[in-house]
Length: 141
Length: 141
DNA sequence: GTAAAATCTGCAACTTTGTTGCATATTATT
DNA sequence: AATAATATGCAACAAAGTTGCAGATTTTAC
Image (cartoon, rainbow over all chains, first blue to last red; front, top):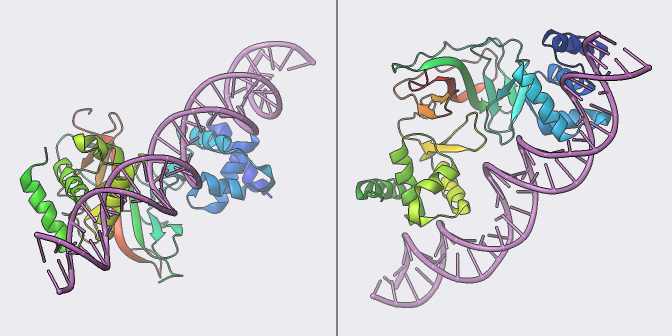
């Protein structure tokens, strides 16, 4: 199920940040790599097939990946939190996320970045920026 | 508690969109006007004083205001949804929202707008854009 | 102003999403 | 292989949001 190339990559990423290489972390990283877009706990669970990770495990795994910066949280008009691989994102900005108002699907608009905002007010220090877009995806337009 | 000037404004807004002028809608609109930033159901409840609106009422009120466009949902790194008055927002973009990583407070960065994103891909129609910023507020910087 | 129609409101019960504590299992280190 | 360190799963819980329905308000029509 999990292709061994992805597994290798996942192991390397985990070693680099000094996290235990557990089957949960490896599989979840592989799932996120394959997906290429933000996924919720529930979506990860469904994609993990026979393994059936407990939801607590999935949340705790994501949190550990979040803490070391391998993963980001994406905020959107969904109730559940969505997580995605942090590669391709700079420290300050990630690609925008797009929600289709018709079908509800989420897309990452890779290769697109907006200028970093400069606050019009004195004293605000802006460290990160996240952009969310809404509209119609090609299938629904 | 609710200043009668705000009440008047709220009534006008509701009439304009043909919603019943109920005390719940009037008070909640007034609370949002006073706040000037996105609030959660729980924050609205605390600010409504003696009235003690049921949380169901607050959610349903916000939903009705949302449907007619008087109110927006702001997505942030908070678990609960936050709502704010939609005035000052164009159809396509609202001012950015700022979360302080130290104190957790939310600020609206009024008077600031970013260029609307243009999708790098054929077929995506972008209708709305929302920007979220993270950093340090003046009190914490 | 009053009655009827339309729409809100509150309550109770429920669903979904995420968290905590603890005992057991797995991974890394020596 | 033994030990220390960390992850996992389960059960129980907490927080956020929703649904159905009866009773209360607001509008509309007269």
